[in-house]
Amino acid sequence: MFKTTVLLAPQAISVVHRLLVVVAALWFTVACTTGGGGTSSHTSQDEPRALFKEWQIIDTATGQPVPLDQWTSLLLQQDIIYLGEEHHNRFHIDAAMAVLRRLKAEGRTPALGMEMFGWDGQGALDQYVLGSEMTRKEFLQAVKWHQNWGGSYEDYEPLIQLAKDHHWAVDALNPPKPLVRLVAKHGLAQARLDPMMEQWGMKDEVIADDPIYRARILEQLQACHGGGADSHYQTMFEASMVRDEGMAKTLVQRLNQIRSGSDTMAGPLVSYTGGGHIQYNLPVPKRVARRLGDQVRQVSIFMTSFDVGRMEEFKEMTREKIADYLWLTPVSAKGPPRRC
Image 1 (tube, helix red, strand yellow):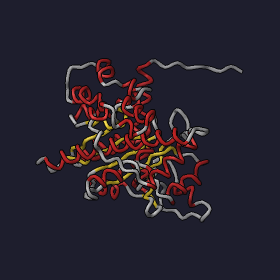
Image 2 (spheres, rainbow, N blue to C red; image 1 turned 45 degrees about the horizontal axis):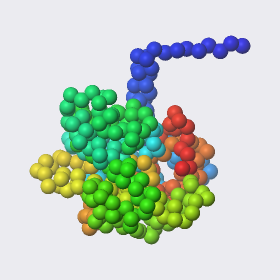
Image 3 (cartoon, rainbow, N blue to C red; image 1 turned 135 degrees about the horizontal axis):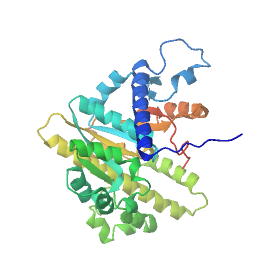
């Protein structure tokens, strides 16, 4: 037996990828519009398999799929839409693109916030998105992509290109990595004495230590970084608080800017981060609500890869309300999500 290997030219690979994205978008539209599988009845044993499938959007308040038109109407009423991804899953980028394009189709001018960029790259991000002559290579250097995030920029480039095409504002959500490392190494109390905290406007910020958030994050840190000293977990936890509080601060600043403007079609603000920053609405959404005195309309969407072996996990996510909505996508080319 012989295996035949077919090598595609880069142009062909590009065409294939675009076709896959179109097929995924079409399937997403059909799945959401039909509730993910028509109206045929199922036995109780078949119900979870019928409920959970690729491109299905589940309302965790009801445990049921939501039709696309109904969901779009809800999104249009929000101040902030939180999208939580599995990092470097291109299907999640495609999902975010679908949301942004749908908002635009309704005449809206969304703003975008992204975890993948640090505050120390905001100036370069503004220049690039708003139409400077900066090359792609110059942009990645100026925005400090490899220092602040790393990995393949191509995974996230479609979001930036979409914003660039329409001149949408894009906010870097992450505090600079040196600031986060400072807290992780020395703890929050000592870090507050460092000039870097004042430089980035975090020295006097209220960084809420919510007990429910604390329990969730510490449990996850211990599961993923077992064997450490309690003091080490504490400083890691405090670094997580600083990141989430910094993201909330950035989102509130942008939202207040949108609210103070005269454009009634401006917004909503779309926050694109890892799923861990929106889980159970605790890390960022709750901090945003606190900063705005609960005067904010916001919705969270937790995106994760669909696999038939994860049925019980999907049920648990829905039961525990991992977010307001659970969005199931195809599995990334990198494989199923890792625990940590």
